[in-house]
Image (cartoon, rainbow, N blue to C red; front, side):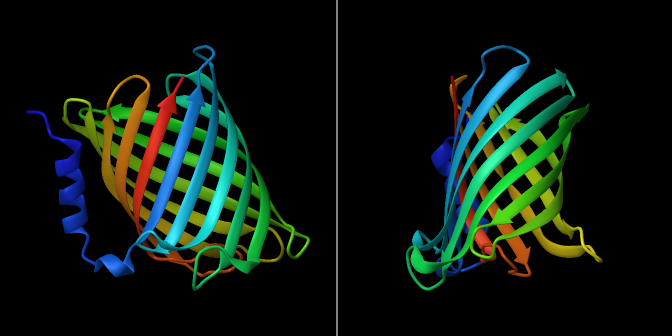
Amino acid sequence: MRIKPSLIMLILIFTIPLKAQEVGSWNVIDVRKNPDKKINYQLEVQLRSLKFYSNFHYNELNFTTNYRYDNNLVLSVLLGKHNTYTEGGDFLKPLITDEFRQSIQAATTQKFGPFVLDNRYRIEQRYFFTTEKFNYRMRYRFGLQTNIAKNIKAQFSNEFFLSIGGTNSTFEKNRFLFGIRHIISKQYELQINYLNQIDNRKNDESGSNFLQIVHIINF
């Protein structure tokens, strides 16, 4: 049975236990280049709003180089520019944070029957131009996905953020996500997700609930 993406989107929206005005938008465009089986390059743009396509307050631009060590392990280096704006409107200044980020990452995958389990480990070095300070953070994401129809997968993930360095490590945030992946072709994939974020709102974007739409384009 083939499930139409429009039907999946409607089901997802109506299962969100929140009013529409309480849900922000989280938009991602991810362009990937695969020169060979080992190396992969990614250019990713994100745009987020605290209300449903209103009160845009955050954007980021990331460049990633991935190296596939084997079928179960991918190693990555990431560089990113992240801007967080004042709440209350669209891209209001002054900036809350103007940040450059560099990270190293390891991602593993394992298959268990119909399920694919993934684990992602990332260490970030963050430089804030607004305060001229460095910050270090560790992130761990656990994910699970399975097929629900031809070229369509259900997915779930939970990610923890921990500030490290100094005298103490501090919990920063948690992100819970569930949604669907529709692999339309080898060149294009669409994801529609619901994302809930628990955040202490220190040196980062705010917002708790988002409808996330991800476009992945492969060359």
